[in-house]
Amino acid sequence: MTGFPIDLLVAGGFAIWGLLCLALVLVGLPGAWIMIATAIVIDACQGWWLPASAPLTFHPLTILAAVAVAAVGEALEFALSAAGARRFGATRAGMIGSVIGGMVGALGGSVLILIPVIGTLVGALLGTAAGAVIGELHGGKKSLRETAAPAAGAVIGRVLGTMAKLPCAAAVFILLMVAAFVA
Image (cartoon, rainbow, N blue to C red; front, side, top):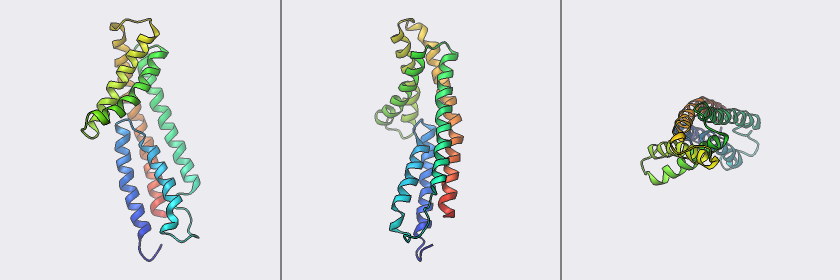
């Protein structure tokens, strides 16, 4: 530790930032990846407040473990979102459309609905449904009426996927926060 506890201030700031990133996961944004990127930036910049001989705040193996856990969360979200759409009769095009629509919708909702968190969440859910409908219609095998069930399934799957991803993001947060305070 240095004479002035700036490293403790950085760790505390990271903890607060990590909680905000967890909230991003709830609305479908990549909060775990933002935490990991922040940890990498802190490691790259720590020479500004720690001696050059100090070990990295986030050991490379800690970063790799966080990446592995975040990747599991992404895989769970993708699989559950696609499975929800499939369970309600979506084709491959509908499943792909729901995933793309959810991402685009989250970003669009954040910009168009200026209520923090709510805009992103509403955008993600509407985008998921719209993406499933567009995917189903693009396949040409379904009428607009027949796309309702796959779209509903995609939204249910998206919600379940996000709920499955949240514990993984929480694990990334705990892992990195402990590393920040122990270093």
